[in-house]
Structures are given as C-alpha cells and as structure tokens.
Image (tube, rainbow, N blue to C red):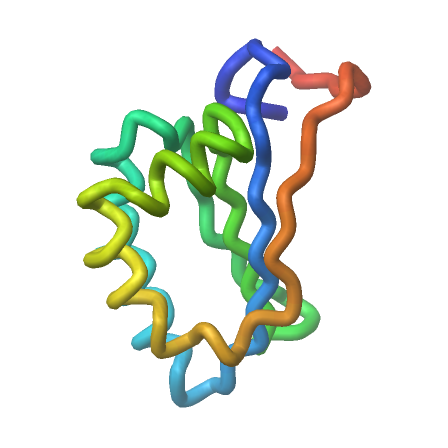
Length: 110
C-alpha cells in the first residue's frame, strides 16, 4: 500500500472541493508545487487523486517522515514559501487537512 516498508511516518490528507473551471489551474499548481515536496528531505512521497463520482473532489496524500518534521521542518524550510504560494489560491477550497499514522493493518499484492 505504501511505497516504503517503514510504519514510522505520518500521512497528511488534504481534501479539496475544486470547481470545474479551476481544476486545470489546481492540477498545474500541484504539478509545480511537487518539485518543492521532492526537494524536501521530510517528504517521502505524494499523490494527487481526482474524484470519479464527484469530480469536484481532490485528495492530496503526502507522506512525511513525521508530523513534527512536516510542521517544524518543512514549514520552516526554504521549500515551503514557494510551495505554499503555488497552492495558496486553493486554500479556501480545503474541506479537511489532517495527519494520520499508519497501522500495521495493510496488504500489498506483489
């Protein structure tokens, strides 16, 4: 399920409600913002998911080395300001922004 085997990480889930006319801009913003996530030693992976049944919904999944590393490391790093400037126009479209910890309950088909 996860792109790595450790269970010592934190998953940030951000749910957005993006109107149809803004979707191309939203996806372009995250495509560019992803470069700053990739440059951060605190980010393990990220993915942007788009809703099928409810196409206005997006879920951004970011795996961080820890919640503290995300909040105290990434948010105070040189990568954060340009990342935030790209996604800031969609801040008011956020429906949820929370951290989750993995459990040992998982399975991956190999």
